[in-house]
Image (tube, rainbow, N blue to C red; front, side, top):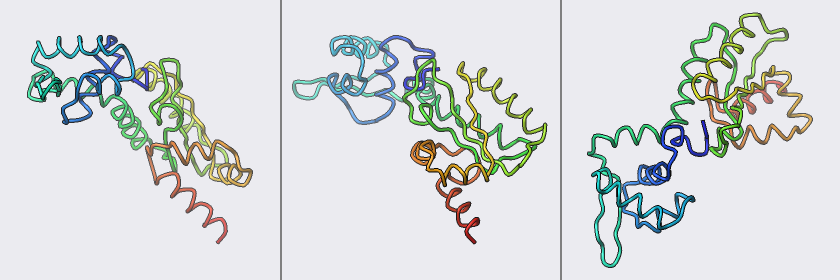
Length: 210
């Protein structure tokens, strides 16, 4: 799945970015503004898509002065499907939450970071998952869970899972060494399980110093 444009998994034409813009707001927008927000195609191409979608009733077109403004017709029977397609990335995060929350061996913290968290990945991007645990020697059940999650992720999204599996002691060592990846975790991480990463790091460092 292209994390920068998840709708392209199903809609690979210019319709996808146009519908994504309209689904993101209830405010009327001109074709020029929709083109600016979609950041793809030509303005003429976007207008052609809008007028064609207006012909189906999925998009409302209203003349305001010299311009035409467009909105998604949320009463249309297809609107619910459009809105769900714009939520594929959050739905993927929910899959991770449901799965990890059901694990027999729980992590202390789990979060997705990197391009998937930022929403700027592409079809070839891995999904980066940070897992923090309290084991010196993780049990076999833990390792089995990670392998299963990798297989599930591939089925859910078509992307490979890259797991950053680290102990609490290992996280402290990263902090002490000033590892750059820690800044990525702090800035990008989408919480999946446990406290937010900044809260978790704060608690961990204060426990260590106590």
